[in-house]
Amino acid sequence: MAAIARTTLVNVDDLAAHLSDWCVVDCRHDLLDLDYGRREYEAGHIPGAVFASVEDDLSGAKTGANGRHPLPRRDDLVALF
Image (cartoon, rainbow, N blue to C red; front, side):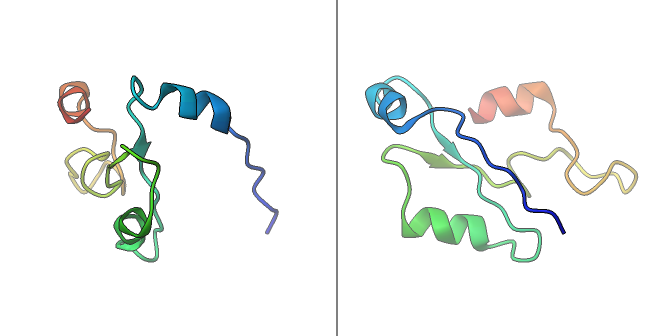
């Protein structure tokens, strides 16, 4: 299996400068350990960050034909954030 390349979307200095006016969402997830994200968030997170579960908050209703994590309805996601 090839290594996954990771890049930073925003650097630490920019994040620190905007913590008071940006919404930071922690959505860590592990398909094999569904409690991982919440557990890691509770163990430590960026000050002011909120947790959003991939299983619950960031997925739409499952119909049995739309995959494991279907996109949520736009209005539901807007209401969450």
